[in-house]
Image (cartoon, rainbow, N blue to C red; front, side, top):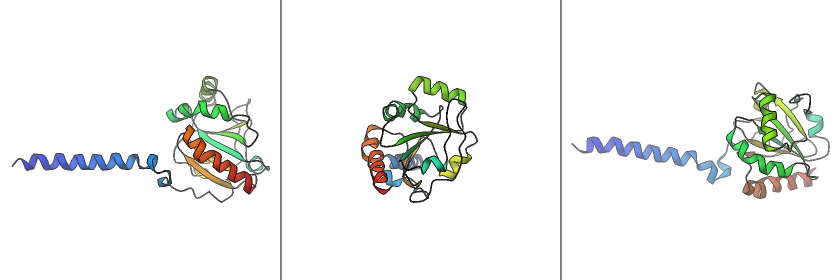
Length: 182
């Protein structure tokens, strides 16, 4: 009779353990992330509007202008975006790539407050107020970062927060590879 009480508890514990493992599988193995259909293909041909009058948007012309571009999709309501902001701030103004921001489903006022608090490393900032541009880019969560070569071809997609490890082992190698391929 005791097994009637133990069996559901054991089943629940096994299910909870499996779900916990699956939830953290992507962190342990970045290759487990959903692959991007854009890698190896041209960046979406969208003219993205500027965040506000103080920013410039970007589109296919800027992404295929001969230099490597790093497009960071972010939002003020995104906790990992706040965590990665100090590291992104160190990347602003680098000569080996242009850093562009794509704001997903946020307001210019909230983003300006976010940038005032965290610094603005972006050369251009576009606003995706309704999330349609993010769909074209294949974004399924923020933050996500794309490396685009000088010909406008997406060379890499990084899902999640840019940490020092991700910067050293994923982002910068992808930028170097994109520079060689341009």
